Length: 307
Image (tube, rainbow, N blue to C red; front, side):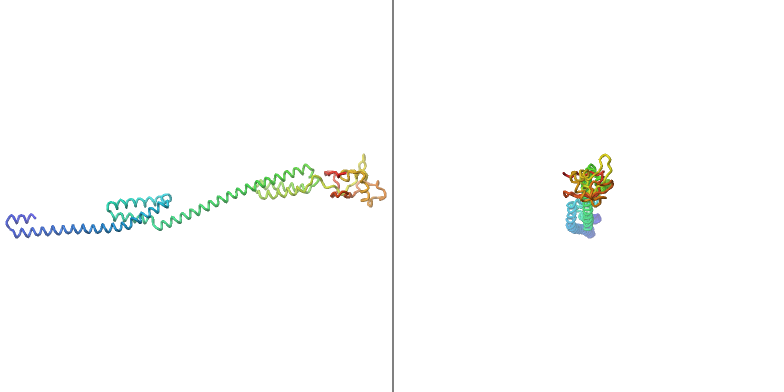
């Protein structure tokens, strides 16, 4: 432009015009280039905005999904990364940095992808399964403990009942009246206590029940004897009269003829009821429907036969 001015001052008008036209042409080309660049930038910005407008809502949807599904609590690092990217994308969008906003929104989509959602679903399903197993195990343990406590209580009651019956039997001379049953019941009771001490409450209860019912077969008195061996008692000799008078025989001396009739065939002199000898075994018939069994034993306790 200075050259055109100089030519003009020197009255070289043709040269001045030519130079001025060159300036106009150059300025016009630069302006058009700038205008075109601005237009291209606007087109690109619009294109970037269109892409951002499509991606941003999708990213926001994923953030909302994360919030609804409490991803922050279970996957804090993943959530914080996605949330930070979303905030940055929104800020970039606000200042029309649409390409950057799109890139950041895509980071959100990548972080909170469908694969990640599937992982969350699988993780939580496994967590729920493990929780269910733990709960079931806990409930099973509670039930087992309750059953143990129940069995312990049953065993305690059964042992207590059996022991009470054992003590009662012992007080009634069961060791002599019913030696086999008393011994068996005592052994079962001891085994029940051993099982209880070993925490085997079911076995303890069963053994105690067996002990109880075994001991329940023991009566207050021994069965009345079915036989009597004549004794040598110098101060009070046995005879049918005195034998019949024994409480465990007939409790009535006048019943001596019953003994005589039942045993006279075994007498040395069947015609003489007074002739009996020590160690002679006499049968004692039942006269009132009473049960009799075994031989008379001085260690046993018999209920007197009612007169």
